[in-house]
Length: 379
Image (cartoon, rainbow, N blue to C red; front, side, top):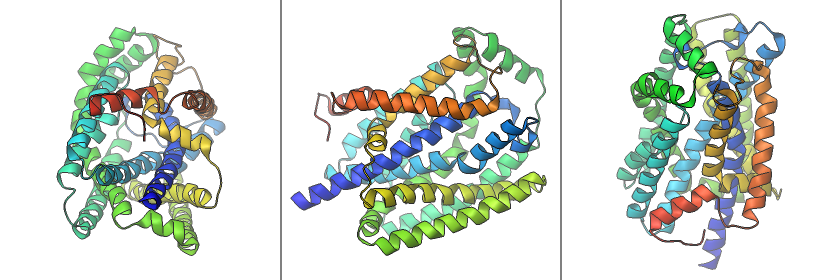
């Protein structure tokens, strides 16, 4: 029993390290989203006139966009399976966790930023919970089918969006609200225009995330992490496959993107690159962890992932929107990279300071109290 407990603690710490790393990517990509208009369509990185802006956009597009939310979704599925197993099939507890997460997500969506992912995780998690007793063979088939379908769906939707340029009064009104509007004017705009778009997009996002949730849970059911931990040659082999695949797909994507080739084919390749790079990032952190590297910084970030995620969006919306710092459309695009690094460094410093005094982050603490109905020590 003690050996099993130690094994679980190691597993959780390595997942925390990967989650902490993914937080930086989420911050970076979300920063690029907050400076864009939801109705404006997808813009190619090559559309930037300034060379530094174009290079920064390419880096983010190829190496970050989609990769880290994919990694987070896989981690959520793995954490779900760990929770259910550790709590002796604690489905009722997990339902409460999902309900609290949904409430937090909706509040975040309405009062802070349209890009919230928590409410989607809560809804998708409920479906995952309802089907978690299926055989792992069936789950694997469903996950593969969902990923292939969602890849085709996203490639089509993004190719349509890329060919659409909105110069209408809607975009102009959005820019006016974000640059000059008060907090309540931004809130009104979000309720009237952004939320309906999110409802429309929810089935697209659900299809992808649900498949990734299943993949994450299967990592635990098939004991993939334990096998990677015990077999160094398997670690190296998977890592090399992910690296080689990502390099090939990234090269193809750059050629297609630079030549303005078929938008559908470009985004189809991008979707597969998203998965391969997400796996490469995750495997890289795991290799470092299993190799004995102390990654306490990343682990502390991962332990407070919910708190850090909410802090990030509050920070950059306040910084960019007109009711705060007013940097919307005033900072060059390349500024998102050093800004993301700065915010992440501040978060890591504050988070490490906090965890020296408390067992978990403040939002995680509230989440746990509501879930269990009383204060309990963190696991």
